[in-house]
Every structure is written in C-alpha cells, then in structure tokens.
Amino acid sequence: MIIASNFKTNHTRESTAGFVDFINNQDSFCEVRIFPPFTALDTFELRPNIRLGAQNFYPADRGSFTGEIGYEQLEEFDIDSVLIGHSERRHILGESQESLCGKFDFAKEKEMEIIYCIGEPIEVRKAGIDAVMSYLWEQCVGIDIDYEGLIVAYEPVWAIGTGVVASLEEIDAVLKNLKTKIKAPILYGGSVKVDNTEAILSLEHCDGVLVGTASWEQENFAQMIEIADNLTKD
Ligand code: PGA
Image (cartoon, rainbow, N blue to C red):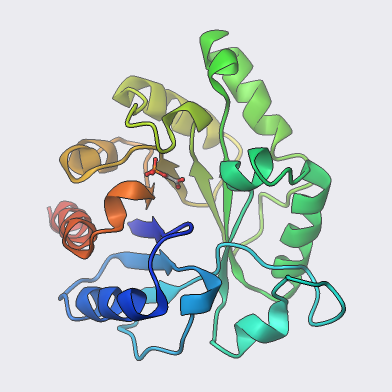
C-alpha cells in the first residue's frame, strides 16, 4: 500500500525536516511518499519504505528556464519520484496535456517513479460514470500507462481541498474501471482524512491514498500510515 503526502505550498525547510524525522522514526512498512516544496528538499537518511519526491520539475537536465527546477537539481537530493498532472497544475497553473506528456516522457527516460494524477471536474461527475471515464481516459492520452515506474492517482477535482470526499461507491467504480486497462497501482486522493482512510484503503481496487490538507500535521499522517500497515497485516 502507498501512502503519500503532498505538501503543496506548505511547510518550511525547518518544519519539513521535523516532519520527515517524525515519520521516519515511526515503525512502518507500507510505501510512504512525501512531496515537500522544492526549498525543503534535502538528503535525509530514510527507512527503505520512505521516499521524498518532487511536486513538479522542468523536463530538462539543466538550461535557461528561469524559475524552474531541472533534473540535475533533483538528482542532487536523490529525488527519483515525481508528481505529474496534479489538478492544481492543470487548472491553476494551466499545464496542458501536451506539456504533461513531455514531463512524463522525460521522467520515464530518467526511470523515475511517476505519480500521474487524473480527475474530473464536478460538471463531468454530474454527467455520470461514462462521462467521468471518458474524461479520465482523455487525461491518459499520450501517457505510457504500461510504464513500470507508474503510479496513478485518481483525484476528482471537486473533492480536492474541499472537504467533500467522493462516496466509497463512486471511488471504487472509477478505480475498477481504470484497472481494466491500467496495471499500475492506483491511489485515491481528495479530502482523505484520518477518519475515512481505513474505509478508502479497504476498497477492493484501491492501492493507497494521496493526501493533501489532512497530511500536513505529522501526527495525522503517521496515523494514516499506521492504518495502512494494520490493514496489510490482516
Ligand atoms: P486534499 O488534497 O487532501 O487537500 O483534498 C489532495 C491532493 O491534492 O492531492
């Protein structure tokens, strides 16, 4: 099972170090990913099940791309896991499917782990499951869904940061559909909290969660990891 925390634009260098240390001191065995802001990246001595990743990158080793972070800057901190296609990058930062495909191909060539995020807006959800699935498959166009370093995160846009979580039936129906073509692990994201983690992780087709808001408190994130470990033990 994979439990991932996306810090987004939260935490400082100092608070990230404390957070990572806290999680690293927990006796865990599920796969844990932490995506801090760039400024807080560092080389930490971590348990083998814990990895830090980058929320974004520019698909070049280095070059003249003012304000961007390239592969060489990530490599310096041993970062080999990246988020691509998060809804905030698609909708707030205006990333196109074409630019996401460029990032995907670059990260794939570098053999990085890629958490590729997809998710539908509310008007598509209201149109029903078929509309949702065709929207999600559109977001996979140009993406090598057979890439072995791939993890997919299904995150309905309307459930991200809103406190509105998709129903368990809605989540599992989508994950089940995605699994007809995608062999990679599939996570759910969107208002995951300590209280709903167990139910979501228990869904037949769910391989983990990608958590924003509720994961920014280290005690909460540690509890989610513990829930995942306990479910795996059963
Ligand atoms: P949220 O964010 O947990 O705050 O809804 C999830 C995400 O954006 O990955």
